[in-house]
Length: 217
Image 1 (cartoon, one colour):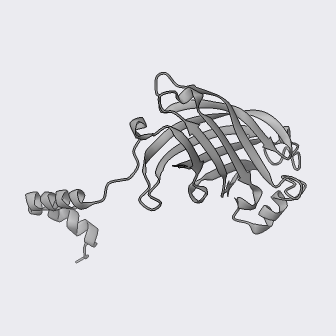
Image 2 (cartoon, rainbow, N blue to C red):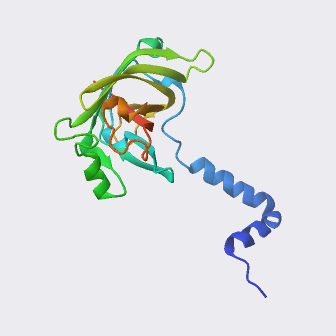
Image 3 (cartoon, helix red, strand yellow):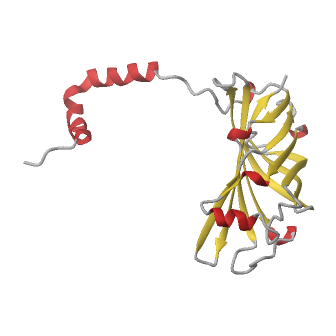
């Protein structure tokens, strides 16, 4: 006779256990710690926030030779957010991204991307984004368009981020009021002078940004 896997056996036992099993699950749920953050704008206090570099990531992806998408991550970003939840359209954000925070699965690729063929990190060690205008979605106040200027390799171009508020609360580790955002954008690397292997490697670069900001003061 084939032995049932523990998970399958438990599923078959549910009708027998009935109410006692449900009661046990309820007890577990009641004792589980609550998630510190929630998508609740009323939790956001006005003032200045700074990035939590350890939990702020900028992902990128490009199409490689028409075969597949390749992606990596920029970490250790620093910056500030000035916000009043009653007037989100007046918020201002500035983010600096050090190229030393670039991580790829291939160390050789990271080295190549930091060379003059791409970022030219020896002369331009970081990228910077500064907001110029914020438009909040009237149908969903947790979403906004953030227009700004992105500087890479000493070249500044306008970029628009599609952003959404993802949570606010007190971080139990740092004990600081924290708010989070996700954002997406697509840029052309050729706009910033990165024309190496243009064609085989796509010009379009998709950015996927996740930022945690901590209250200052």
